[in-house]
Amino acid sequence: MANIEEIFAVQKYIEPDKDMKGDTGRYGMVSSAVKEATEAGNEMLKKGGNAFDAVIAVQLALSVVEGMNTGIGSGGFLMCYDAEKNETRMVNAHPKAPAAMTPETFVDENGDEIPFDERSTHGTAVGIPSIMKGLKHLHENYATLPLETLIDPAIRLAESDYRVHGLMERTLELFDHRLHEEARKKFMPGGTHLKEGDTLRQPELAHTLRTIRDKGFDDVYEGEIADAIIKAVKDHGGIMTHQDLLNYEVIVDEPLWTNYKGFDIALPVPPSAGGIGVAMQLKILEQVDISQYNPHSLEKYHLMAQTLQLALADDNAHIEDTNFTPAPLDGVLHEDYIKERLEQLSAERKAEKKEAGDPWKYQEEGHSDREQGEPSGKEGMETTHYTAVDQWGNVAACTTSIERIYGSGIMVPGYGFILNNHLTDFSPEPGSMNEPNGNKYPKSSKSPTILFHEGKPFFTLGSPGAATIIASVVQTIVNVIDYKMPIDEAIKDPRVYVTPDLDDQWEDGLSDEMLEKLADLGYEFDQSFREVGADTRIGDVQAIMIEQARDGRLYGGADFPRPGDAQGLD
Image 1 (cartoon, rainbow, N blue to C red):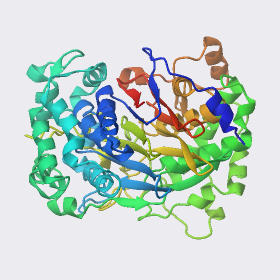
Image 2: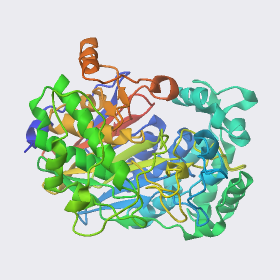
Image 3: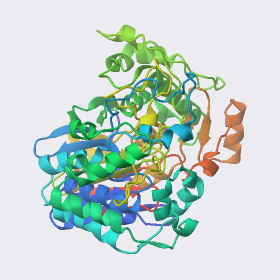
Image 4: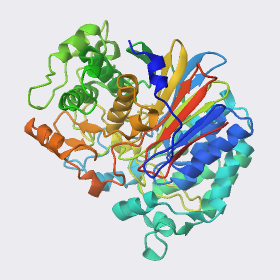
């Protein structure tokens, strides 16, 4: 059992520097991947709003300042803790496929898989934009401030000359080939990439935001914005209809609950496989007792990699939209199954590929004979995460995305936002697990997470990064609970990511000696994401810690690849 007093004993005032952004506070905290969005959320707390007001304002502001990763056309998962009701709920605002989608959507007339860049920038890749329905649910059920107040910072940002940040410049250098004509007009005026320090004014997006302000979130689904979305999708060969937009509703679920060393953890349920992946890895690590090893030891990195491989193997084999295929959620976390998977681990044995197990024998009912397909390999290369805590103890953690950086590359003419390509999160192979189908959710790895101690939230976090989300969330939790790191160090500590097929990524910070030892164990260091990805780290963790014992003192942290910040309210 971990000692929470020891965890808080090491927390400290966070000194901001070029590699870390963070803050302490007593009456609220907001953390996001772009400073201006954090400021928008903090503005709501200063106006007397709660955590849910703050995250609505953050998402709307990110639509302006991080439009390559999220926006009006995005979707995601929101984990919400209502302090007054002492209730935690997961809001599924994930994009769904149009009714007309079929399992053959992403193969050609010969049955061959259409290349990823081709299928992901086509209108058929666009899932029903869903995050605005998620914000509507928050506004109607949790928030306290009027929509006009919540959306005002985003409108101001869109109407002003916004200074382009380095993240946008890097993403354009790498992904300009994904942009269709309308998007190129915005991000490549005159055919030249926007660069850090350039200014960007977005009147079309400001018009969209004012329309939402005046007519409500529903205009995205049944008004002028909806008409523009459907036209843009169909102009690019898509199959989405007005009825698909009208039919979309968010789903409010009980979270997936697990426990790690005495802390209860709320995680998303399918169609996100992130929650079960995080839970399974933590269950295995608890049996290993990872804390017995030095946090920067060979044994720790080796065991962390192996447990991640096992979790990802089972995620790939057993998890998809449970409306189509049952998932062995109880079996995967069953005590006997965890013991069975433990036999695959060794602190000394060389690295090797890992296969999925059979958790169905530990499941009371249900079974799936669906064969595992090839993962898309490109799922959600980037996303964004943000979180807020208020003075009353409410917590909101949100992970949203347009899937690939710049999504489908299809910008809605006259409205200034990019549509997602979430439907290429499906495996393209007909008949396989996570195959495309009408009214189906593609599988996700998003994992907005809240940890509780004795029934009260004490830590909330999440990350972008596709399947690497699981690695980022688990390793940050272990750094806090097992290694008693201050929140800024827990986020900054180098992370590892290893797939079941032994594709490896390792962040800077490991010594040459350690890299050599890991190479001797069979790990090959793939850091090609430095050329093909827009960030310099695995994931981008945003987190807040809540200390109940000292007047609710809050500690916020934001990772450093992006221009984000955590800001507290005193």
